[in-house]
Image (cartoon, rainbow, N blue to C red; front, top):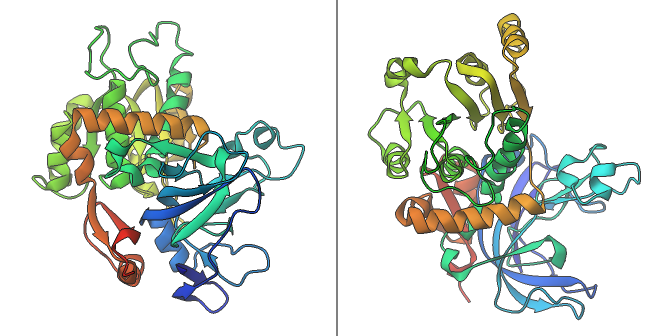
Length: 381
């Protein structure tokens, strides 16, 4: 079968022929890949900033944002069948018995760092015609979400972050958990009355816009900041879901909300911008990092004001990475709600579907659009 792989030792990116995988264990499932999303992590791996092949291999098949179709199941698999659409989790637990998160099935909180990640670290990814994995790591996507199913994995970043944020908010004695509800997902801001919660999303890429959708469905009055001036396709998407878009030139219009932002969802990986935004946090608020900046030259930062505000205003700063089973289940549910509420907006996040032979342009170039996808359904027979 065909697969896209990096060779770290020789610093090469290639389309290779490899043996098609087959089921070895009774709990495994074989899937035919339909689509694989391209993200910043893939591009960084292709620049050889990181990326670790499986033990004994000189290459790593990349790709972790997947949508596949089940073609075969092991004899002990009862929750999946041929024809099901599935997305597969990325992270696998470490083998250390002292790692309580991994032992409890929460490898996204692994405490040893010895986890594996498909397409990133120690396990081949999904940018191939077929893949095999354990059934427990696969989640069914409804046929109605076929066109956006590849967005589930990046959406899990937001669903995990918001799940954690809502738990943090519950530390406040006056917080009403029914007003912002991750499980039941309120569909209109203020639909149950009470306080309006404000959120600021930094970045209008795929992760930022998916985060904005998740925030809107939960019940936040949501602002999205991006450097590109409005109007543009991203600003139109934000406005179509009832959010507010703030371009670089319109920052002065945002000043009235300084001090009223309960949650900042950072999705740029730009540390200087992120820490500037810390200053807009309200008392008792939460700042969530999702981006991973590239290592570069040290920069000056006013740490005193960040620390002072965090102490005096009971602010919480946290990071989130990858996702576990709960986040995948919530992401699939949230994607279905987004399709029901804003079908055009949700579908417009996927701005390009390309055949496999376009992999070099997508991974090494600077293609336009929000989320570009390699489609295996367009391959020649």
